[in-house]
Image (cartoon, rainbow, N blue to C red):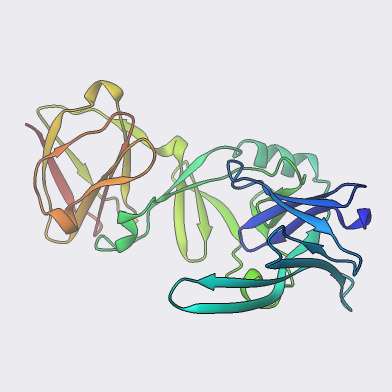
Length: 283
């Protein structure tokens, strides 16, 4: 059974599978390092079972030559009864050697944040965390989450999993425009944090949407924490403010043009049609 230990991929995630000679299997997520590891015990039928007996896992090598983690589970939902699940929840992945040029390009992006810029100004997305942090896999060289790095500016998943854990697969494509690096993924466009400059809160200032129509992002200075601003919003525009953790603390589409107190080390975004101008007044 030890041959099945390794890294298994699924949509937007990887799972490390450790198997001890004593028969204990441990599952841990690289994307959620603070989550407790799952533990399962080996059974004589060749599968691994959870302590409560509700989950059973085994390994299957399919006709396509790929190895899968097969999960069967009973889930009880209070007031709704019980449901049974049986599906592949991961595909075993192998590390990849990258050419020097490709490895160097991706090393520059490791740990960087990318800010969403092409969402419509009325979009509910502005109420959610709107940044994407790119982290190279430390467990599986040549990967970023479930995606194989395929070139200096591209990465794409090569998963072949039926049902839930193989859906919504998304490729990454990077390009440069006006000296800024952009990431395109599943129809969304993000800009590298290096292009996001601090906003200096003065008595009066302004922000204008460029000809690309992309939203304008700024970081907030710690010294401006607690300062209150009021923004004159164009007819087809909006702005949102986020705290240091990326949580939206104010979105003008919901709250109108009321005064907003700035958090420390957060960010602010202005979205609207190309040429739209936002006038900012320090209160």
